[in-house]
Image (cartoon, rainbow, N blue to C red; front, top):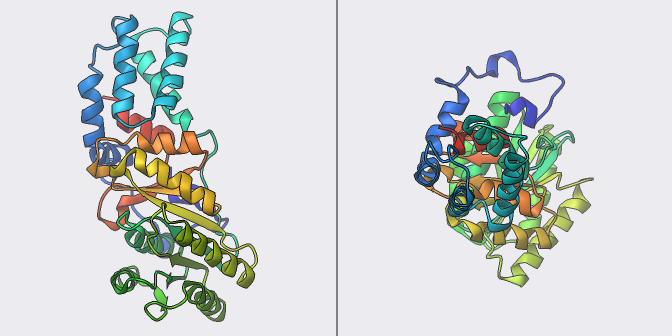
Length: 325
């Protein structure tokens, strides 16, 4: 999936900011980044797994997907459907069975192509999640992508006013991405920072405001309520805001990430998931589990430290990189 599909634009990116295709192809790079997850799966899914089809085959497949954190419920659905189709003669042969497995796993994430809603000017993107998930890094990479690929003017808002380090880190990323930053005083009102950032965007005719928020622990109800308050302030200041609320989940946390996403979705209306650190885990299946079990689309994934390692999520491409030899 290309950025232009995630963020449709009639004008498209300016010619001078179009990027060249990735060396070796996007799928090859993604496969490389998901090597830990794929190796863990292939340790369970031998090349000859589907040569002999019996009860043990389906048990081994189920175990492998659960180990990869696809989730027990989703795994049971995928395996039972695949087994039924094979027994009915609808799918025959090892290669066809593996291809069908890729299709079924991709289907967990839904059939609709994810989109980032940035049609309003300015658009407000709120980024939420617990500390350490990679929120600030994601904001910097997203700001850079919007500026370099689409020529959009982006302002980032340092609305995590509780940690001086968070503001400093966002300043570093804003400079790297070539975007402006609006900050408040440490310990100040985060809603006021977002309010000021929207005002700055309107005054400077900027296209997008991306707001960092405090890394709230999802078990702290009072802090989650504060996040809801920040959202209400934004809605009063700008019609339709926030236009996107993205929760950043650390893939290395596995099923705990699923619980985080569920808790945040109960506190605020989460429109999409950004799954980070996929290159550092053997549990990449969590991307499919989150989308399938919560019905919240995964819109972006982080597969490394470089700016280009934040990319749109393509369920079929992801499942193929995870499963296929």
